[in-house]
Image (cartoon, rainbow, N blue to C red):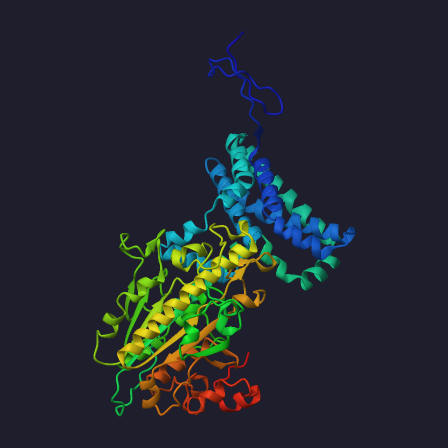
Amino acid sequence: MNNTTAVYSGKLENPSANNNRGQKVWRLSLSAPQLIVLIVLWVCLVDNVALWSELYSRLSPIGASAIGYGLSLLALMVMLLVIPMLLLGQRYVLKPILVLLLIVSAMLAYFTRKLGVVYDMEMIRNITETVKDGNTQEGMELLSFSMVLFLIPTALVPAMFVLFTKVDYGSFWRDSTGRIGWAAAVVVVAVVMVMFNFKYITYFSRENADLEVYLTPFFPIKTTSQLIQRKQEASKFVFTELGDDALKPVTSAARKVGIMVVGETARRGNFSLNGYPRETNPELSQRNIINFDNVTSCGTSTAFSVPCMFSFLGQSEYTPEKAAQQSNVLDVLEKAGVKTVWVDSNSSCKGVCNRIENTNLLKNADVSNPLFVDGAWHDEVLLENVDQYLDSTQGDVLLVLHTMGSHGPAYYRRYPESFARFTPFCQSKAPQDCSSEEIVNAYDNTILYTDYILASLIDRLDARNDSSFLLYASDHGESLGENGIYLHGLPRFIAPAVQQEVPMLAWLSPELMRERNWSILPNGVTQVQLPLTHDNISTSLLGLYEISSSLYKPELNLFNDDFMGQDMNKVASDNWSDSERAQSYSPVVSQ
């Protein structure tokens, strides 16, 4: 037998003399445009299953118009991917580009199909902030065995096909004319399909514009470009310092000590303080607190909401880019003479603490500390140096603690074993692989742990005999698998209420109440049910320190004198009507 090798390209080519084992190697030979079109079709069909599934549900019953619309959409998607691939996918870089397209598209498809993630501008911002913060722990938690199983058929198999296919480029002239011909062909097909279905396309697309969020990888590309453009525009503006007129009262003799706790991913509905049937707040329910049980977050992601919580812009005018170009309430408090310190057990302060004293416990973490588990801190670490921070000045001080809270998807990593009260709980980084009961149990354990952290902070403040307060608010809520949606970060226009409804509460020391001539809080929880938002936080912090400034808006202050001067037993009374409460409580934010 001759030592020969045959190469398959639709026919047997001349034997290769390089193979001395006498084996026949069968390789598919395609031109560059043929390979590009095949891979693009794969991406448009396989990685867009969520799109086609949603489209099928909206087009049913399927008829000629529905089929025409679907084929027209596919033709447009193919055209929009094939043309740039034909331009970029030149010799030597074609295969790496196609493999990258397959991997990225498959990963985007995984989070969309399995977790209900939508890659709007704020989700892209969240991703870029995670990368910017070097938060490898959060990134690693998103990797799971479930993802690997998904990527093998959707990305690895077609990537191997690309790598082992022989690309016949031919001469420069033949390759160029082939690319032009294929580009012309896909454009003609797309245009013809749209022309024949134009009437139905315009009607259906107008009524279903939200379908674009399922387009992979088109929608993420669009929103990424929009974010880049917005950041470029924002970089042209000069930073604006606010609060030059901010002053503390000279008549106040008592030193004010405050702790602001920024919660993470806590949803209002899972706090027993707000009527949840499970006892997730056993400690806080025994403290004399004010519970604001009707609060809506500024956004649905940390990167969006945290700067908003401390901004003076107001939700209607706020963007992270605008907020980054002006002072926030922490800057103004510092300017007015309140020492302000930010301590983070989360990834970062998202720019809020850039101009004040700050510490990120994830940087240079003490891995020997038993509270440092699986690359992240349990929030008890924030308790370790509270007194040291509060005693670092003889004047007024505000300590801001940014917690890990209930951050997913690995909820089970957010609390020590002693707080695993609700069982069985999900112990997977892929919550969609757990039962609904297991997910909720793990999540509720995080709320139970947050309850302990907050109660511990209150007890520390109470023991100091200072004129002090604690204010807690979560940055956003969370989806726990309702309607197939997990985690958070959906655009507000489609985000479920659980991603926007957040807990907020306050504890005020008897010393602070007496100093301000406010009614002493009654035993137990005082419920305030009026609709509030993150817009109330900045003015309320100014109000607690009695800072006079043009930035102060008394109608937004949670602790204005009119309200705090009321009989708090009456505020907490079930017999007091909403209309009576509304008349006596002025900080109402229209929704």
